[in-house]
Length: 505
Ligand code: NAD
Image (tube, rainbow, N blue to C red; front, side):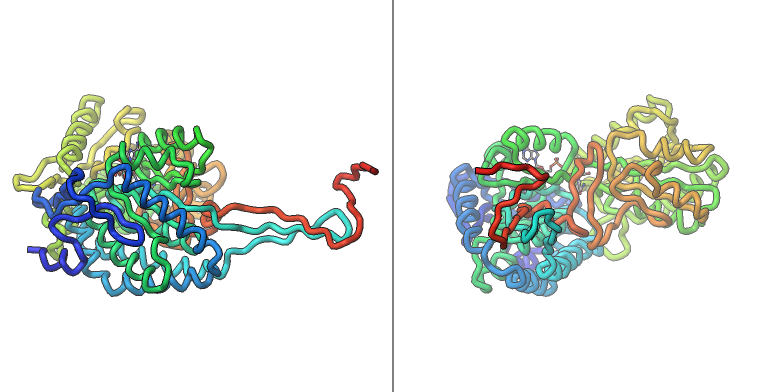
């Protein structure tokens, strides 16, 4: 049914899984199927990269870096501009492939490609703004500057739920910074990575820079673990679960490599007494059930003032019961499938635990009687302190907790291990400011009168605590992809020492 689409994107029934300036195709290596979670049927297969393929990709990234790092940054930006153009041309096709491979609805699949395009635009501008500093020197006829140089080939590890955008957050910024990129995508979304690599690789080659973007689809052991210990990659940017992040931090840390960690979230929305409830309900429903609850920024906890509790539950339950769940490529569908059977089981197990710990399922949680990994999003009343509420179950479960005092709401918001996104619905200015203050939300992202998900390009994206502390995409996050150099230049004829130190020889 979607064969033409795959063909247009260069995806064959069996595909090579590694690419630098060209695709590496060694027959006989292990293969992996990409499964459409809405049907349970395979879309295509990929030949997984082995150790030798991995080394070949990284060797090319190292070689390409030598030329790329001395290419003027605005010229690098021009390559990224062309990539943005190519992505615009492929937006509907690539968006639909993301839908088929991850199960996110059509507008979210295309939205993900738009996010890549926005990222390209941002990076093009950035390519003329990699500013350093001039620093006043205490010594006469001396000048100090701080400048930024490319870092090297960067390893990018991505999660299944944003199989293309997260690569763009990293790769487009890294590219204008003068770094080359080696990408290990999620084993659950290899076809999206293949299609992106075809588009981007072709564009970079046409611009005269083959090998800047490399791809290596392989197992955790053969590729993932090797990236972590590979000193040729000075920076590993890893997006995924907290469990993965703890491991990455430890292994890369052992070689004193750099990491950018973008890990799990356990995000909450506070609904205060003065909230505009129409806005709050709409914001919460998108944040909690959009992408079938499979965003790192998904709202997982709703902290509602006790005076509104029953009303909010009732209105949410009504909205939940009206959600259309089904094939994500069909118009009007708002909730697609979970990514795989284990995710369905994890959701059902979490609901069982919630009930055992004293929670009550208000609505949803059932598996749909049809092929594919479809579930009804669930709304669950819980008590503060239930252990399951502290976990990120990557599925649409919204735990509802009540509060009495504002400080209590903030304390509940902050008492989990993760610190990615947070939101408050309030029309009370003082309350909003307190939420955003140093004593308010402890998350990397804090919103007022919008939900927790759906960040736009421009701001730095990332979170604190077990979310890993990494920042990507916007603001000055580019600095993580470069090395900082402090330079002191003496244009006098003396050698004065700082701090008044005398050393006369
Ligand atoms: P995951 O942790 O299972 O896998 C993420 C990636 O890490 C995959 O490419 C996987 O192959 C790789 N990986 C796993 N173990 C590895 C190892 N030992 N060495 C090297 N690579 C390894 O996560 P997932 O299920 O694909 O994605 C969902 C998770 O990602 C959720 O926790 C979600 O919150 C998080 N996420 C975070 C962000 C963010 O920006 N903070 C964005 C998207 C997803």
